[in-house]
Image (cartoon, rainbow, N blue to C red):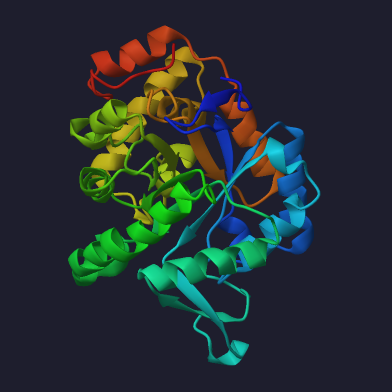
Length: 338
C-alpha cells in the first residue's frame, strides 16, 4: 500500500494519508531526541508525501507541539492535516520542580487534567499558541480511559462527555475545527463515547492490531454505520509486532506473556512462508478496515521512519491473509488488504 495514498476521513471534508506521523517520540518519551533528529524526521516524512501529523500537549509537556509547529510552519498549510488534543492544561514551572516521567528533558510546564468547558477552550487556544499555526483540523479529547485514569475513569468520562464535548461541538459548529473525537487506549471507551455523542473520529492506541481484533465486536461496526473515522496508533502493540517474538519483546508496554509470544511465533512462520516482514503485515492490516483511514506511526530516528514507509509499501499476497485466517491467527471477519 502506498503510504501517501489519500483516504477520506470518515464523513468529514478532509483527506488524510494512509500513513501518518505521530509525534509522541519527539516529545522525548523515555529518552531524548535532539532537535536535529526531530526536524529531520518531520522533513523526511513530508518529502515522502506524508500529510497527516498528530500531536498533543501531553507529549513532552508541550515540547511535541512546539517542535511540530516549528517544522511545519513554512509548509503549505492547506496541504496538511493536523490534529492535537485537549484534556490537560499546561502551566509554566521551574524544571527542578517538575516530575517529567516518562518524558525526558521536556518543556518546563506542569500538566493538569481539565475536561471542563472553559478548560477545553483554554487548552485548545494554548495548543494553537504553541503550534503557532492558524488552525488545527482535528481535535481529540485525550486520555479519558481506565489505562490513564484508573478508578476515576467513570467520573472523568462523564465530565468530558459534558464540558469537553460541549466546547468542541461549539468549535466544530463555528467551523474553527473540522472534526472532533476521542483519543484513548481502549476501544470500549471510544464505543461508549460514540453512543453518547455525535463524534466524527477516534484515535485508538493499539486495540486493533494483528493480535487484537475485539473492536470488531461492536465499536468498529458502529463506526461503519456512523461513518466515523478511526486512526490507529500503536499498531505494533508497543513492540512485539515490530521486533517479533524475541527475548524481552514488549506487548502493550510490558514484557510479552508466553501466550502472546507463542501466537507471534506462529504468525512469523506464516510470514516466512510468504516472504512478508512481520511489521509490514502489522501496518497494512490496520488500514484494511474501511473505518480506518490512517495508521499513525511514531518513530525515533530517520532510519526507523524509512523502515516504516518501506513496510507500508511491501507487497503482500492475498494467500498470506487467507493462511492466517485458516490457522485461526486472525479473525475470519477481519477485513484484510485487497
